[in-house]
Image (cartoon, rainbow, N blue to C red):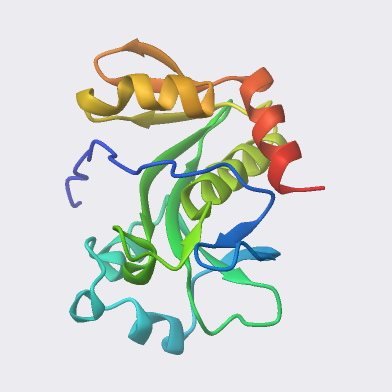
Length: 175
């Protein structure tokens, strides 16, 4: 049995949008989230293409589900990825990453990370967790997640998004 590494997340919430928003034009694009599983998806996310995490390795952990965020009617371009594990009363967010073209000062879209976190909250509601999402954060971003996601620091860099904050996020992204 392989030892699972716990990674402190350091995603940045650039903007909470109603979907994702083009940085240059300000146009909004509706998104959809689906399981990552096709061979074409795997080719896209190889580390050589600029992804920071080893998503293929992440897919091999049986307790986790990896989801991709795409624009409606354009599911061949992955905007971001998230790895989630459904527990009895909450969802654990293990990894989250914007696509390489959605990072840094030259990013194409705003709202990608917020959209994926909102999806984690929605999945928690759907699976009986009342919206609760747990994740491990880097210390420098604790305040950022408290302010932008309504997350609560519960100690040892663990953060939780409760029902109230989860409702705000899911209502923002999922009508």
